[in-house]
Image (cartoon, rainbow, N blue to C red; front, side):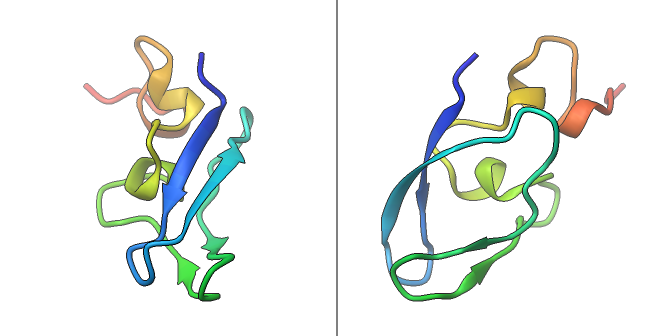
Length: 72
Protein backbone atom coordinates (compact mmCIF):
# COMPACT_ATOMS: atom_id res chain seq x y z
CA UNK A 1 0.00 0.00 0.00
CA UNK A 2 1.27 3.47 -0.90
CA UNK A 3 0.82 6.01 1.90
CA UNK A 4 2.31 9.10 0.26
CA UNK A 5 0.48 11.07 -2.38
CA UNK A 6 1.43 14.20 -4.29
CA UNK A 7 -1.39 16.74 -4.02
CA UNK A 8 -1.68 19.33 -6.78
CA UNK A 9 -3.75 22.44 -6.11
CA UNK A 10 -6.18 23.14 -8.97
CA UNK A 11 -6.17 26.84 -8.05
CA UNK A 12 -2.45 27.70 -8.12
CA UNK A 13 -0.71 24.48 -9.22
CA UNK A 14 1.28 24.13 -5.98
CA UNK A 15 2.53 20.57 -5.46
CA UNK A 16 3.03 19.02 -2.02
CA UNK A 17 3.79 15.44 -0.94
CA UNK A 18 1.63 14.37 2.01
CA UNK A 19 1.18 11.19 4.02
CA UNK A 20 -2.37 9.88 3.84
CA UNK A 21 -4.24 8.76 6.96
CA UNK A 22 -5.00 5.05 6.97
CA UNK A 23 -7.97 5.18 9.32
CA UNK A 24 -10.05 8.09 7.97
CA UNK A 25 -10.85 10.16 4.90
CA UNK A 26 -9.37 13.63 4.65
CA UNK A 27 -12.18 15.83 3.41
CA UNK A 28 -10.34 19.15 3.54
CA UNK A 29 -6.81 20.30 2.77
CA UNK A 30 -5.45 23.84 2.90
CA UNK A 31 -3.07 24.52 0.01
CA UNK A 32 0.35 25.57 1.28
CA UNK A 33 0.81 27.69 -1.83
CA UNK A 34 -2.29 29.88 -2.03
CA UNK A 35 -4.27 28.95 1.10
CA UNK A 36 -7.40 27.79 -0.73
CA UNK A 37 -9.34 25.05 1.07
CA UNK A 38 -9.56 21.98 -1.16
CA UNK A 39 -12.62 19.75 -0.91
CA UNK A 40 -13.28 16.45 -2.70
CA UNK A 41 -14.80 16.58 -6.16
CA UNK A 42 -18.31 15.22 -6.54
CA UNK A 43 -18.21 11.44 -6.31
CA UNK A 44 -14.82 11.30 -4.54
CA UNK A 45 -14.42 10.47 -0.87
CA UNK A 46 -11.43 12.66 -0.07
CA UNK A 47 -8.94 15.23 -1.33
CA UNK A 48 -6.39 12.51 -2.14
CA UNK A 49 -8.80 10.81 -4.54
CA UNK A 50 -9.58 14.16 -6.19
CA UNK A 51 -6.18 15.92 -6.29
CA UNK A 52 -3.57 13.31 -5.37
CA UNK A 53 -1.26 11.16 -7.44
CA UNK A 54 -2.41 8.08 -5.48
CA UNK A 55 -5.93 7.27 -4.22
CA UNK A 56 -6.52 6.95 -0.47
CA UNK A 57 -5.64 3.66 1.32
CA UNK A 58 -9.24 2.32 1.52
CA UNK A 59 -9.61 2.71 -2.26
CA UNK A 60 -6.23 0.99 -2.76
CA UNK A 61 -7.37 -2.05 -0.77
CA UNK A 62 -8.82 -4.71 -2.99
CA UNK A 63 -12.54 -5.16 -2.47
CA UNK A 64 -13.03 -1.88 -0.63
CA UNK A 65 -14.59 1.28 -1.92
CA UNK A 66 -14.14 4.78 -0.65
CA UNK A 67 -13.28 4.84 3.04
CA UNK A 68 -14.10 1.21 3.63
CA UNK A 69 -17.62 1.30 2.12
CA UNK A 70 -18.10 -1.51 -0.37
CA UNK A 71 -19.62 -0.45 -3.66
CA UNK A 72 -21.69 -3.11 -5.45
